[in-house]
Image (cartoon, rainbow, N blue to C red; front, side, top):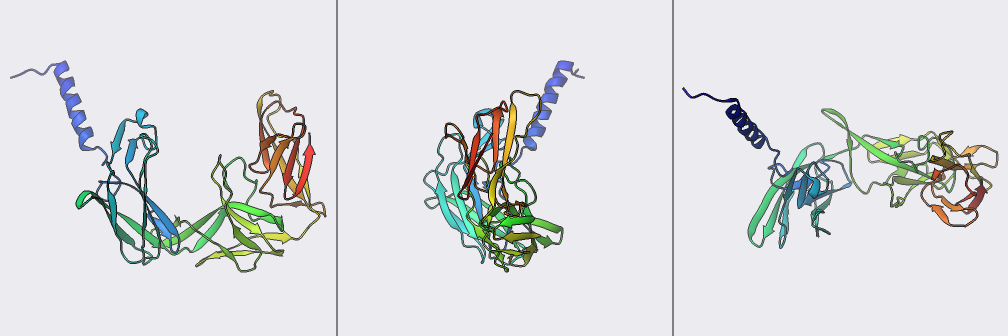
Length: 333
């Protein structure tokens, strides 16, 4: 009978381990058949748009430099077209995106409004065609859901206005910047649903959807402009509604104020912040500041044009700053 040495046992163990890993290797694609690398929201609010991305590059771990990846998969879309077979209620616009560099993904983008029968998954089939030849074929599912509830969520970035959006007193002409969340009821419970092109209406006419701010350093939220005085604006989209505990006041005499520098005491070099805020003609604080430009009070050079909270790294002593917003300017130490 043959003897199995420790070295031989180790080699067989390594071979067995490699076989298990190979057998359990994650499919190269994310479609229903594992053939194509698809990104989709899967559950979308009825009436909103969604974009499905069909990329030609995938890394493990996801979304890292291919030179640092444990594994890289590529798809050859050169000289191809995309065929889409979708059920009623989906009308896909297909666009081709070339990769700007070899290490960045390109591929196809499929955009549609979610108008299919709500409450059930619909299969969409795609084929990448090279002339009459099918080069790749796969499928994905989309579900349209009727929203039943909405929320305004505070933005999670350092330049956002502090506090819960849509609460308190706002000046007419100001704005609320927030993330808008839609929710829908399903047999498995309430779920959050996505979508593009959301427009909320206010039956009281106090708030109006505006264009989102475009910032190079952060993701922007949705803008709700305060356009008329009143209390309790009621936002709605289809079957979802939200009444906000806020008051909008018409106060042409409000002033722009500066707070005090905030930061860790006793440190010469640390991040410090300075807030701008609106003071009503009655002396009360008003919300609504969203667009502030900060400049050096002496040199006049731009310091920051993103948000009404100034961020500086360094010692607390500066020559002075000025902030401008809504046609008003104030300066401080």
